[in-house]
Amino acid sequence: MARSIGGTSCLSVATAYSSILTVLFHCAIICVGRASPVAKEHKVRHTGKQQGFTLIELMVVLVIIGIASAAVGLSIRPDPLQTLRKDAEGLAQLLQVAQAEARADGRPITWRATAKGYSFSRREDEGSGIDDFRHDRQLRPRQWLSPTLQVHIEPRQRLVLNAEWINPPLQVVLSDGQNSLRVERSASGQLRVVSQP
Image (cartoon, rainbow, N blue to C red; front, side, top):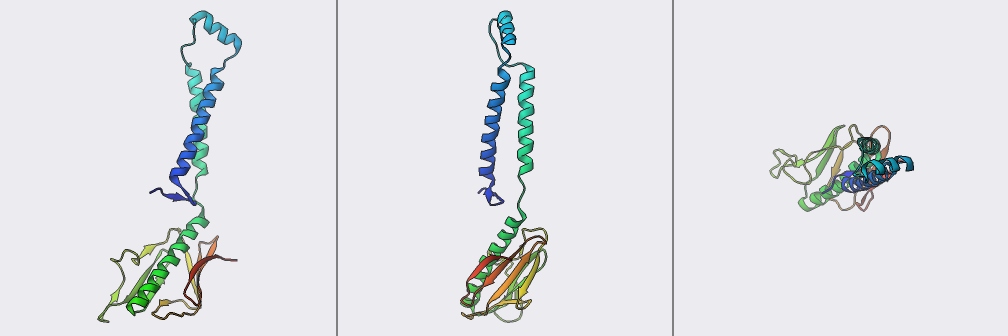
């Protein structure tokens, strides 16, 4: 599966840049291969036929390819808003999974966040300990994709998902210092990601 950068898969970006470099290479060969008429006449007189490209021509083509590659490399940068959006969308999906689990199991699930990541937990079946979902594929502890993230929960600082089918509205605000997104829960339990005004 291709890794995604800024909403575009690396495979499609690499394919596009490969095509661009191929076209540039061919253009450079055509441009360099067209010497002045006097030089062509001189080559034809002495060698009879042009046998290939000179070292200078190949060096010019390599310089053009190097410049194009550098431009391509500098233009690929992950967009911080896209990374924040991935964090918010992933959180919304996992909160939906945790809500469904709490309804099916009957035990409330608590969500806790730090600047580096977040985790879900609930009481063990016997009530003697805490299940932190460490071995669960979906609700295991996770790290944020954004390097630094601030989390603010409204109306309270602790998020508990219970077995109730109708819950009060909730907002989890994620901010990376430059951009902010909200994960909103409606009274019907639907979660969605909204841009912060």
